[in-house]
Length: 197
Length: 197
DNA sequence: CGCCGAGTTGAACTGAATCAAGAAACGTGG
DNA sequence: CCACGTTTCTTGATTCAGTTCAACTCGGCG
Image 1 (cartoon, protein in one colour):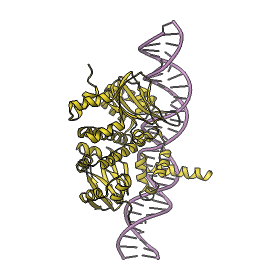
Image 2: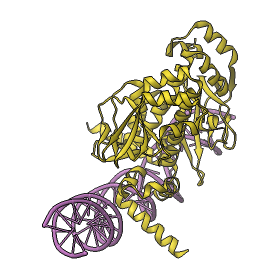
Image 3: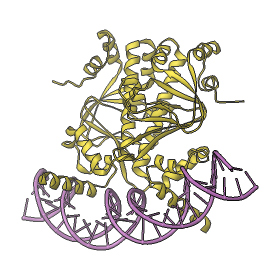
Image 4: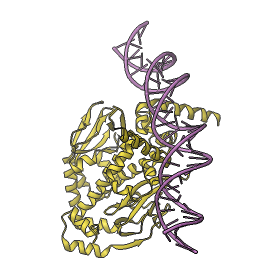
């Protein structure tokens, strides 16, 4: 059985009436995507927030030199979307791609904002998501400004130990803002440090 | 005359009834702060969003090595706050400080969320602020991951040309995530490049 | 005048990138 | 279950962007 269904998520995060959850669920599309497939590509206007019930997504950009930069991973119980693109109706600069076969719930944003006006607890829920998003982004910026590659890696394995087992190391490096080679060396250094202790 | 009063800002950003603006304004405290003084310090729980009518603020952290890292500047027409601290009622890790004598409007967050439930256009306004915030944070992360110090500086002067004249260069460096010495060299390089062209 | 803080410059250093090669792990088909 | 090719990870040598520390310049201001 699966504890990451959307309804479980909703009821665990906010005070919400069971029948409201039902009607909400009934109006959200569920989607199965294969590993490697894309939910968003640059140039498209992002139409949804994606909730991951099962599987793993990544949210990333490619710069002028062709390098990938992963902004976010989303495994079970997480939301991803290009909120800038959704909200301001602008073409995205980002990719959202499945790293595993996944089961996703699509949230249409207009639908969401509509609900937020009707239902108080849903408004709170939406607000919580936005603030949580801001919190993550801000922490990330502060860390990129202040911490070394090693510190950032240590922080990553502390926060996302589960992801370590599911994604290739090169993607961790991309998330941290370093090259795969550098991450390999950081890990080597840490190993010898721990050995000495 | 001043075009950055809060009421001007509100009416230019959303469809909102004039009398609602009035009642809103009546309930927000205005505050004059001297250059150098603090609106938030680490350990405090941030209680407000700060709207800048006049002047300039910075939002920054200090890391373990004692280095400052500026996350955001806020001049006329901008909001700042530690949304994480406000929303989750957690002690902040950040400073908010006036870089000039400033006139600030205080937004109590509970008050805001209350209003958002009553007034539809205010809900939209609040949503717009949050999404705008997310947009900025995301762009910043993407840039820290992908762009060189020089690129980041060029982007900065393009986006915030006005700030260049108002803040010391060392703070621009802090915002960009480099040392003042490095920024000085970046500028030198750019000058000779432009000369050659 | 003389000080003071901001900015610049230089020289040495360092963390991380790059490029190239090799080793290990992994999945697929025989 | 093994052999093979492919992708992932590691390692080494070199280069490079940005840091550090120290000295110097400059403009403003008492």
